[in-house]
Length: 434
Ligand SMILES: [Zn+2]
Image 1 (cartoon, helix red, strand yellow):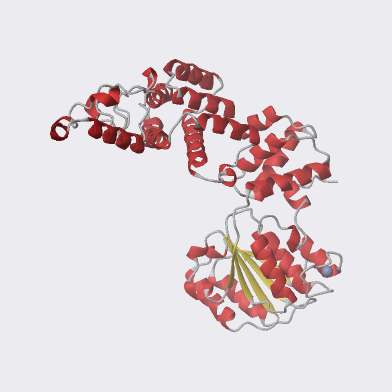
Image 2: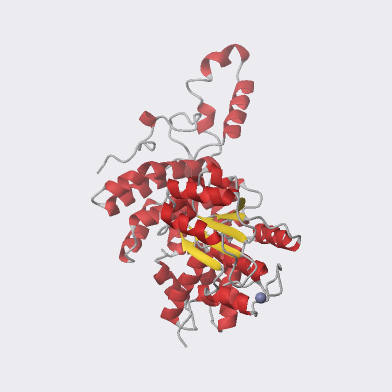
């Protein structure tokens, strides 16, 4: 038997089986059960999240011999033919290649005739936003007064491109990107059914690479299975996904946080040996600092972080050594230097300079601490003296119990961003050394 790709083999046959779109499938089920099914639906959302799949299930629900029913039998001739794409009364049209007014006129001619076999004639138009304006105008006439036996299901990734006149005549359903945990759950089920041995970290990597698209996740999984067979090795998953080893990113972040320039250079050497791309690497590193920031700022960051338990443990440890203003500063500098990295002829040196700048970033004192010290300073100074002498010298601040390595330069530490002339490296401007 020919190999069937996972996305087709495991395509949901019931609304309950559609992954990560419960808000939509629940409403549709209620509509079907209560007999309040509209005549035009708009399914909008990113690609690969179940729009066409849901459209086909809805078509089955309406035309099943045992229906209309929220749970089509998937066994009757109608259901089987709709699943196979050979049912005469479910017409799937690709809006991108049939976008002219003549295509819509053809639909308008056809809708007048009763369904050949089923209860409803159902038109599923994919990428409907690609229709031309005259085509939309022609479609509008049909949408205004559709025959009883006709249903339209439009699918689009770009609902904002649809004319308001069309939008206002559709029941709109917004499909979400699929949460990473749902994608992992789906891949786990597939692995069990197919007898595939794969660890949770690998599943996590695949799900993360798919960026919310179940179809992408399944096709990446297909690709990995064709390379690995039933026994999936995590290093092979990383190789196929082109993932830079997370531990390298963790190590570079650690070197930057602990101001270890030598270690930074050694790790860049490792990255280059590994064949890593500096641009991709900085994006990953920026993402990593963002995760640290989320961890520090959010009460329950787990659903935002999308990391494995081991990765979370490392983040927790590192988060203790870095403050929120420092993280913001690190990300800011990386953003400012992104363009330089893209344009330079020597990415390696540019990357090294950027990372060294990050590692030399002076720790910033929290504003509360600065205020506390100022208050302490004021109260310990004679009244008639304070106004004149607090501002220029501030001797107490540099002599407090700040550890030697964290001790700021003699320059004032009151302002959140050090003044350019007082600091050896200017952080806020893009690199000019190149
Ligand atoms: Zn059926």
